[in-house]
Amino acid sequence: MRSFVIFRLSFLAILLPVATCFLPSYAQETTCSTSLLSSTSSSSVDMSMKWFQHELTITAPSRGCHLITADVQKAISKDLGQIKIGMCNLFIQHTSASLTVNENADPDVRRDMEVALNKIVPASWNHDGTFKHTMEGDDDMPGHVKTSLMGPSLNLPIRNGRLALGTWQGIYLNEHRDQGGWGGGHSRNIIVTLQGQG
Image 1: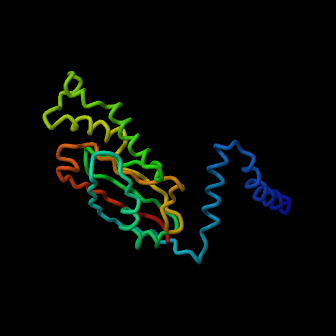
Image 2 (image 1 turned 30 degrees about the horizontal axis):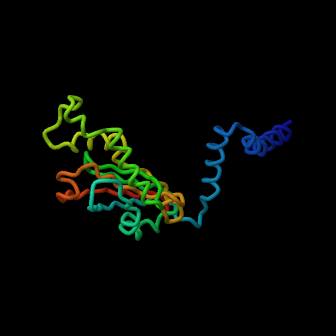
Image 3 (image 1 turned 45 degrees about the horizontal axis):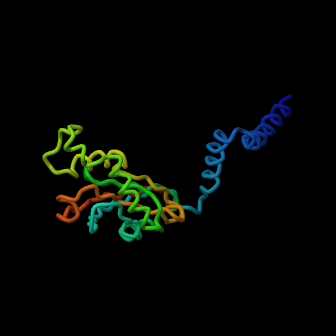
């Protein structure tokens, strides 16, 4: 009887991972990704957690959406190479500039993003009674709204010492101000935090 119980437990241990492959896709994704992670964890890999932090100061020539992927990669390249699997967090310390990920190839996309943002949150709202916070210029309150829409931070996966961006993806710094912004010399500080295992 005891050997029969051991046989059944062994059979279930073999059958359970196979059965998970027939789960619906939303359940299977989680299960398979967990097993993949555990299969890459071997004694030859340094599994100690690593943390690095950098501060970038970037200034662009004008209001709009600016591709900064190369600036970020240059600042973190030495430490990024030490992480096999992890996350990169970027956080911009401002209320009228934001970060996003979008197309890195055609510059018309960046121009069109700025046009779209200006239509979504027009400067005319400073004059028609929509906004009360208007004393810092026509681009100020719209800049605050755009920052909240686009967001102050990004989380990007790290895979094998590289940011796991798609082929056509790049990191954008979106400057939402004219007055006191780029032309007036607003420097934008971005904190980049890397964490992961080597």
